Length: 303
Ligand SMILES: NC(=O)c1ccc[n+]([C@@H]2O[C@H](COP(=O)([O-])OP(=O)(O)OC[C@H]3O[C@@H](n4cnc5c(N)ncnc54)[C@H](OP(=O)(O)O)[C@@H]3O)[C@@H](O)[C@H]2O)c1
Image (cartoon, rainbow, N blue to C red; front, side, top):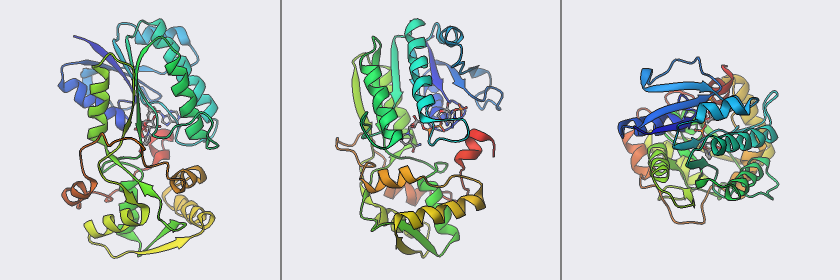
């Protein structure tokens, strides 16, 4: 039985991927910052901490694995966590995989990653893509835009706001695009990439592209709510999101996310790879989507 390592199997994307790999009869091990969290997979998934500060131990925890699926990244700098640290940690992980004899790396990046971007998230991801292309590992780089489900922090949380508030603040004119991918499609693309041997870079994006305004209206319509969209200067929208963040104990939106969104970076330039249509998925999940707020700080910092 092959062993595959999935980072973050107890978190978001890694959990869906792990379920899929286990169903294929693959043995899964996870690396995480939270090795003592309840393990939803029981004995089926073994656990090791990330050990970024101890590369030999990190390599040891990867030994015997054929594929490493890397989801590790930080959405925003918080406390002592920075993007530069996330870049260095990821390089340490990739070197450890090489040292441990892992034969395939499936790395989750982001669509439109760019080593020269002025946005540190996109820049860090772009630098890592370069690092991977120059490594000796057989690799697949998978670039999603926004990965949706009933527990994601964008589509689900937009629905959460729309359920509770009569108005929804949109930065700028709301004409910029967004091309979300369903989390199960993302997991399928990753598992498929893990089973191949050729070096590849693909975007993980769904078949539908919406303007941001269309997306908010679609969500409101599907969950049967009337919402007035208020277009506001990006700085004001960010301020409003910070006030709501105080209420829900989370970072709802960052300046960088607003900039990336408004620059059209949440739309791929490549053909769609996901098959699930958000329009249909919303109809099927209208009762569930947005019924619960999902917090990034809760997920990673225990708030
Ligand atoms: N979610 C999206 O819509 C989206 C969109 C575009 C790209 N992506 C990319 O897809 C990948 C997976 O995203 P995801 O949302 O599914 O991530 P996630 O499951 O929440 O986290 C993935 C991994 O990163 C670790 N991690 C996350 N935030 C961290 C922090 N602040 N400090 C230290 N470790 C942290 C997690 O640690 P634990 O194991 O301890 O939880 C987990 O191992 C990421 O590389 C992300 O950049 C996601």
